[in-house]
Image (cartoon, rainbow, N blue to C red; front, side, top):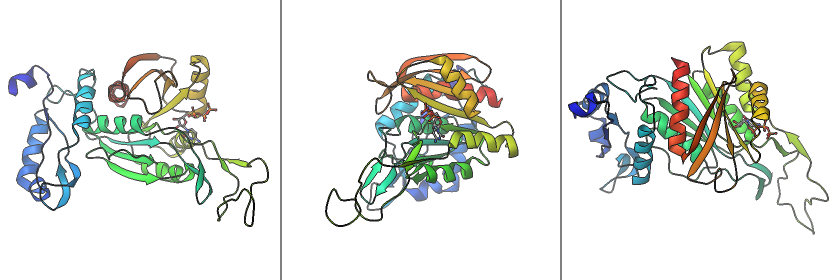
Length: 310
Ligand code: CTP
């Protein structure tokens, strides 16, 4: 192990045991020692254990471990990690990631929504946790297993997400908005199921919409007015036409530091395992990320964030 670490080759451990043993001071001390020596120790998942009990201690799903390994391997480990811990580039940092797609209710059984699954956001969360960050995900309608070692806050609508993100971002070093947020919601929500005919509420014509808050723009405005100074804000723009001039204008309009622009359609984007993108920065720089897994893409973006955090 020592030789491998000297060669800056990541060693990843995925310990699994009962909760009492994981939480025991001796185990925690040994895990901390491994981490200070540069090893990547994956937090166990929470759920059913080998006995009848449940808790923290499960081996994360093989697909999640594979994605993590990919994420670590695609990191430019010379970025900001120390020689002792080359891939812990976010150690001591607190990051908040939004994921999924908001739902805007029309009545108790219907909503306006979008196709976002949360896969890209969860990849960001996993990748940041692997780099040693304390990670919170604000998840809108995501049906994926929680990433191990990550705090998940569940929300439904854009307004729920707005409240949770502004609250969580207050003390964050970096915020990544991967969520597909509905720009509009129905102007009125019926308390009863809308009927096509018969008694009760009906929709006689077009559905009236009202605008939702722009979460990313509000995060940028709050940062400018009250800090935290140095916080890095990352937006996403999923576009059917890749117009980088328009995307640069969107970045400026939102007030974020980086905008990850990706094309949707053609097997890429919503629900797909892979993604490709161009990352724009506020200074006009561009970093193309050729097609790769969503975890590997997240890893490249975290390298850019870590470099900005210094
Ligand atoms: N976003 C947000 N709040 C909204 C809408 C979008 O925080 N109400 C965030 C998204 O999470 C994303 C970024 O803003 O990180 C860009 O989203 P996008 O939908 O591309 O931007 P819009 O301003 O909605 O522009 P468009 O007219 O292209 O939809």
